[in-house]
Image 1 (cartoon, rainbow, N blue to C red):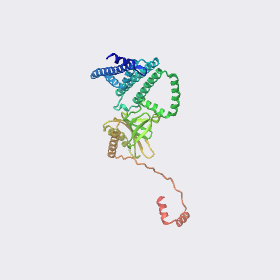
Image 2 (cartoon, rainbow, N blue to C red):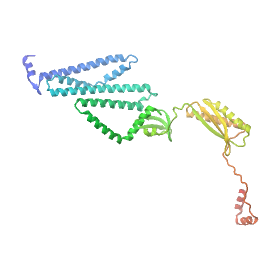
Image 3 (cartoon, rainbow, N blue to C red):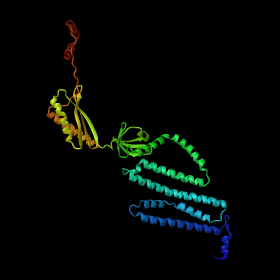
Image 4 (cartoon, helix red, strand yellow):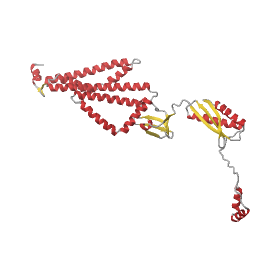
Length: 383
């Protein structure tokens, strides 16, 4: 390059800065971006090689975190490096240094955001009892809360670096937060109820539960509502706050079922027959698989029958298994009772009339004259 060309670049200016200085800044920008991109790529390849080894969970996270590097932010950082070599006034240099912090904070925020998501998902995947941990309300709330906190810190740090008084800003946010909380208190109630369900785990996705008069299988536990598939097939949507304020019966966690059933026999049964009944019931129950006999007793004298009470345990929580066993017990009892000549009692009531009012002959004659033959016949049949 001859002296005239060099003099052209050094003496001619653009926006008060020599063209040579602009070209130098452009070269620094290109070199900075290339070196940064190459360095990230080199580091990513090394970490990927380590991630191929077994139990290299940290390396897997590092790969995902480095992959979330923003090319846009790298380009902005390179531009700021180039701008730094320009002959700028002092006030512009101060602003460039503030922008440096903004770009760095955004990139660190992206890395931290990705790392937090991966760590929390891995944690809930390991500690979940089902394969559908992604639907866990606790996982969703934790991830959402961690991200909100992270970006709130990043935003406040950037504002503080730019010269904003964040103390007054935080105070304003506090007042605004109280107003918003009062406006959406029902939603927040359901939100915290969802957190309570996730932590306390009164039920999980896949459990069969009964809530009041509603029964069904839990399909989804969300931030505001829980969805239940009823026995009729329709989907029931209930607010989480209502769920935790109601008694819940969880049949999925039923290990065994205690069954109490009653029956009655006629009052004309003999003592020998009554003694055989508990023995027959015990033998019939023990003949069934997945049962454990507890007791069977002649409980007492009913109004029109002799009452018995029986208790046994079904060792399988399935309702269908319980009904099959109860049906087999009922049929077996009918066969055994028929063999010893005992039948089940039929509800009945007997009324004994001690006496009827006496009628005189004259009254009877008058009534006979005033009453039709059909009415008299019905009266005699009743009395």
